[in-house]
Amino acid sequence: MNPARTLVRDLFKAGMPAWNVIATSRTADAVVKPTAVLWVSQLARQNIGRRAVVSTVDLWLLPPSTLAPDALEDEADAMLAEAVALIEAHKALVWTEATRSALDGFHGWKLSLTLAHQIVPTT
Image (cartoon, rainbow, N blue to C red; front, top):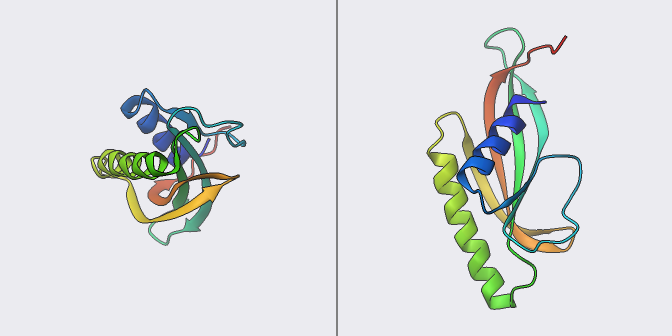
């Protein structure tokens, strides 16, 4: 597993225990509680050493879809504030932007996170 995806998954599972955290190749069938969906969307080779890369992780923050529209907006904004606080407390992660959008019909925030790391063979 990509170290960036592992780090973000573990960070959110520990820091947001009431949230559903999805870090596999699937999306949510339903969003009934605060949900974080994440995957690595890009690797960029760095010239600072062998196998050095920067991974970009797309992180979706989805509030429960059962909420009324105004409550859903408020919950999305609250989730963003909580997520940014969690991310910024971790020195290795950098968030570059947050965009209001929808993932498979579920409204929320999409953040782009970056992490520099080494590619380590698993065999």
